[in-house]
Length: 315
Image: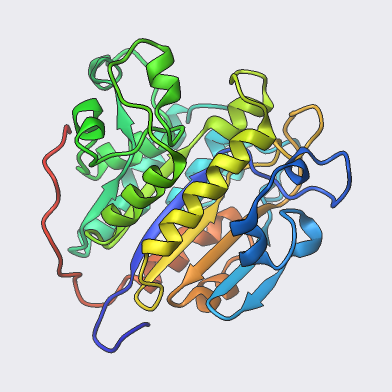
């Protein structure tokens, strides 16, 4: 479990829409320069590089279909990851975008944020959200915000971002700046360092990254290879700052799509990449999206984590 008597700390890095496609010229992910991911995987980010068991790194391909016909989607995929259940089977279909009323009820009752906090573990969601989004009760919420709020995990706003205590959903803040919000655009490396700093303060720190999926759908100014390169740079900077003897970085996704030439959702498996403490033990437990939350809860189910208190943020 790392150094004797020390409970691991987890940085959970969620990447929307990242599937494992073939290792060929048609895969847009292979047009990106990704030295960090190549170092972790021993090869390119494609299906042929999985599984991996090398030193402190382990990687497996997760089934995102959960045995339900059709193409996996964000709503059910993210609930499966956070609640540790077959959300698609519960709903009888793959649900896009936002969880349904049934799945929202599942999240309120059994999500990883809530279960860890019930064990006395400090939990954080690293993303920064505009205050208008946080206060508008009419807007639909994604699974991560719903899970955090149901567990009483404070949500961070743009003041936290400006103070360096949160990270923009696109890492750099370019999307917020383009929409007129008064934020500084930072390098991907700075975002990675911020995530590592937050991860040192909490037993479980989650971050949701959507820009890659938006790029695949043509809703982002930069193409998929450029966005993946930014992700790789941030990931490298975070790994440089994490203590992998006692910390675990977990990178995974909800469904495939960005690996497809047309950006449409796929039935491809998604990656689960782990680097650091107990990486191999966690990887060995995971076959589908629904296995991730139980495996992480088991990893963190030791005595309550002792560390610095959480920042003040918005509930």
